[in-house]
Image (cartoon, helix red, strand yellow):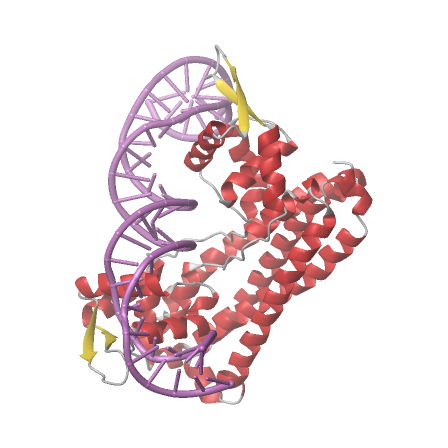
Length: 185
Length: 185
DNA sequence: ATGCGCATGTAAAGTGTTACATGATTTG
DNA sequence: CAAATCATGTAACACTTTACATGCGCAT
C-alpha cells in the first residue's frame, strides 16, 4: 500500500499531526499521490496499531487537542524495506481522456469548454510547482542538494504539466477545425 | 464511474465480446485507463442489467461460446449525457515517485536498478504508441480525420512517455553524482 | 453573521486488485 | 509436451471517495 509508505516517508522527514501531513501532502507528495484527510487519519491509525508510528498527545485549551506523530524504528525499517523492493508501475487514469475518446458523440463546443477548464487547472498546477521550486530550491543550493530526490519528483510534475499545456493547444486547433467532421458520427 | 463509460465508448465504436474489449483496451483506452479482464466482465454484466448494453449469445463448437455485446439506445444516451458533463480531474499516482521521495533512506544503487526497469517499460510503451500511430494514422488521412480524438489521446500518451524518458536521463545524472550526499541521511 | 483555520474522526458506498476456477484448441 | 489463445466468470480483499459529525477562535 503506497499511501502508508508515503505517510512514513513524510514523517521520516519531519514529525507532525495528521493535519500537518495533509497540508504537506498538498505541497509535495500530493502532486503524484493525492490523499484526503479521511485517508490520512485512517492510515495513521493503522500505522499506529502496527507500531510503525507513535504519537504524543498535546492538549490545547484554545485549539483542539492534537496528536504529533513520528516514525518508529519499526516504521523506518518498513520504509527502507519497501523502498528497496521493486515498485509496481501504475497507469495514468484520466476521465477527461475517456470523454475525449467518446467525444465524437457530442457537439465539439461541449468538449472545448471542459478542456479549457482543465487547461486552466493544469496552468495553475504548473504555477504552484514553479512557486514551490522558487521558494525551496532555486536560491538554496544546500536544500537542493539535500532534497534532490523530492526536487526531482517536482521536476517531473512540471514536465507533465508542460506537456499538458502544449497538448491543449494542439487539441484546440483540432476541435476548432473539425466541427464538420464531428457531425458525421 | 469512468470504466462504465469507457466500455460504452468502445462498444459505440464497434460491438464485440468482453474478450475483444480487453484486447482493444490494451491498444487504446488502456493507455490512460487500464482495466483487468475481471473488471471488464463485471462491468458488462452491470451495464447489461441496466439495459445500456445488450448481447447476442454465439454458440461455438470449436471454441468457447461467446457473447457479442453492443450498445443500446439507453446506453448511447447515457454516454452522451456523461460526455457532456464536466469531467473530474484525476491525479497521477505512481509508487515509483514515492520511492524516490523516500529514496534518501536507501543506497542509491537500489533506486538506479528500479528506475532503469521503469525506464525500459516507458521506452517500450512509447514504441508501442508509435507503432499504433504508424499502423492506423500515419498513412491514412481518412482514418486520422475520422478518429482524430482517439488519435489526440494517443499523442498525449506519447508526450508523457517522452517526458518520462527525458526525466530519467536527468535523474540518472543526479543519482550517479550523489552517492556521497545520500549517505549523510 | 458567515466563513475560514484548526483538529479530529466514523460509516457506507463505490472501485480496483488478486486469487481461484475451467477447459478446448492451436502453436512452437 | 508446454505454453499461448480463446472465453468466461466468482469471491475475497484492499483501497478510495463521499457523506456525515463536532466545536472553538478569529477575522471581515
